[in-house]
Length: 113
Length: 106
Image (cartoon, rainbow over all chains, first blue to last red; front, side, top):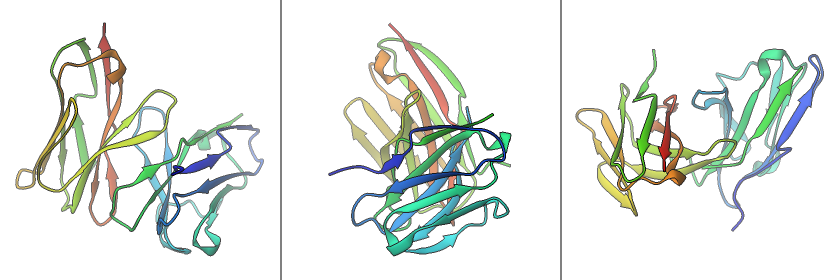
């Protein structure tokens, strides 16, 4: 069974440019999470989906970040415009249902110059 | 204020040593997770537990719900155990510790 797939693995962009990350969760997993992880820190939740509904987006900076999970499967996280401080690893995870064990993707390492 | 605190932040051990990483939390939880993250790598779930003790190979995780404390033990440590170990809890949301960076020297 394939794990959580994320692309791209690495992205370098100039500030003020837009960027998008894609996540394909484990088949059948109802819940999808996007996290941000800074160097030396634990992951911080950005948004949690149950099916296609965003049930927790309180930590998502909505002025520049947006996310969608059409049809309750794949998800896209977008930043527009990117700022220097957005440089981090963006992790996607999925679980069968909310509160169940989470499975993490490899992450996308974003560098904003 | 961090809902999840881990100690130590950094740990260096000789190969073969017994290692303990501690996690304390301040919120009510339904489960606690221990995660492993290798440098440049993704995160792998090691354990999910809500009571007692679990063992996988050389790894043992324990939790004391009353004391809001969990420990991760590694017996006969090996250089390939070098990684960051992260404690996370299911409260009304997921809370993550900042991780313990373990280096095992041959």
